[in-house]
Image (cartoon, rainbow over all chains, first blue to last red):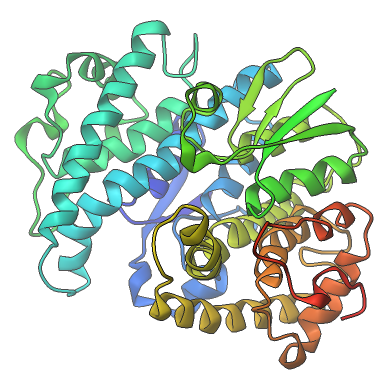
Length: 222
Length: 222
């Protein structure tokens, strides 16, 4: 069986969890706290990043991008990039938008400050970072709504890695209760459709000790 | 003809310039200063990032990762990832190491501070960032030497996207004259081999007005 080494509120880990489910691949989960920098973990992931996918022969694959492309190349269907190279480039552009731009502008400011600092014992959150994160989040919700208004899913006709990447980030922020859904109906419509997919269901059951999510976090109708 | 919209000292732009040359694809170059946020440019690259590849039909492809995978998928040979999925995952892991970890720990601290601030008119460099960048650079040079001591090229037997990604970053830092080559013979041996490839040659001719590189920058024997 495949093994995914992950952390529940890590967007990169969530991205691979959703993808594995979409591809119908069975896997075990093992939680890792990467900031503890355990030697055994760093031997598998020299950069110290999550997740790590351990193949059935016990060999680890590190780096979220490498894992996603590996799963794409090893032929398990359906493809979450689509079939036409130009369309695949658009999926990858949007996936990178959420993996990096959303991560840097929103997730680092909110998740790392509110949860990361606490579990790593690094003091109180920086309120100016949190304000910046909340402000940037609105722009990203507007972009999601803009895309979803013009396309069936974020990158085109089909559910793709773009939707998965966005949901991996946004679901972590939603766990914090920081998403102003009432002001962003377009983004909410899209997220409701994403949330109702069976591949998202396991994430909605994640609970961090001492930091419960808001009630609506697991609701499909929020 | 393909057109690459780029900036000379942008590592992501350099990565695609090297790749296009390795694949033997002809292309024109057009310089863009992304911090000016021109509307015409943002229409092609909503994230505001370089480079952008404009296909022969005039349609733009944005995001460096999307461009690299697009060039890989549209079949131009040779592949710079190799043929076996596990080996391709190792190339991608190392490419991400340099694209993100080296970028964050070294390039942002040195290139953005020394050149970025000046050309964007954002004041004097932050000396603590520069000290951190120089310190982190040593660790990365050690990692390059460690890999090159065990493998023919960074990710295995063949020159790959891992070498290209490392060279794209390191060549920018070398332009600043910040690489302590004399203390890092292993990394120098590897970079000498990279530098002697025809695909690197055009980068060695780059000159930024008012900020010339050190003499050894274009020397193949340094």
